[in-house]
Image (cartoon, rainbow, N blue to C red; front, side, top):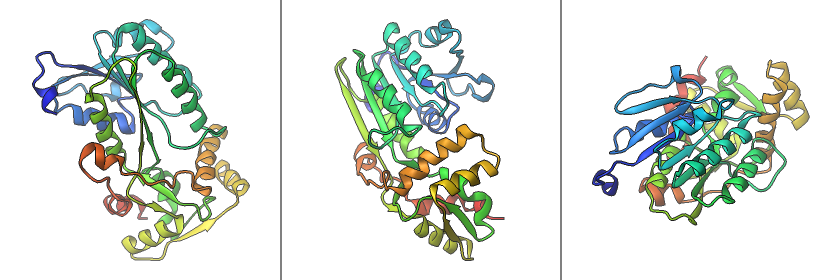
Length: 294
């Protein structure tokens, strides 16, 4: 990124969702660049102000805090966690950025077709709002996050089995660090006010849950079996585990997309943009296999 390093005025980049999975990885990457970074967060106690990274507390109930946090920023990265407020909050960030003179917004969205399922439907609504603004925008549409497997399987794989409703669906998992690497590249790309880009980001290969079980078996040294449930059975099981109906519905949205291979696409975008191949699922599993042991 020599163009950034040699700039006489360092770009100011605002990161909304800096304590999240992608946002925290991106913040670490940007710490080594010749840019000013401000981490926008509703939980400032969880954000580390280090290596020139400022922290700005925002409260969506107090719009002036969002406007103040974006003061002087010319680029904004958005990656908010899934919640009933996500649509309203991200629209508020977009509107404040447009009003404040931000030149380029990079938003993490989700891969997939038009759907009623959450959280995908929320991202569709936010993308549509962003597309109507006279501001340069880049939308990142990643496939399934690899760390979803920790929530889905870590508690039971060590005992030899795990369950879900993915059937024989194929899913391409991506490491959040690879999403962050693409986000960094996107933030530094030249843009103009009418520039609208969208990138589909995946790992190098799609997998079935049965194939993932075979890989887990190899790494753990004991058999791991994937138990297929119907969608109704899976929702009942999630509620029985103590998940709230809201979280269970989000997980079921993923289950249905997994079952129908909605996230089975494989693209070369990560390598084309970053110059490095995305991490493979076996690499990610090997790195995190301790989380799957009893």
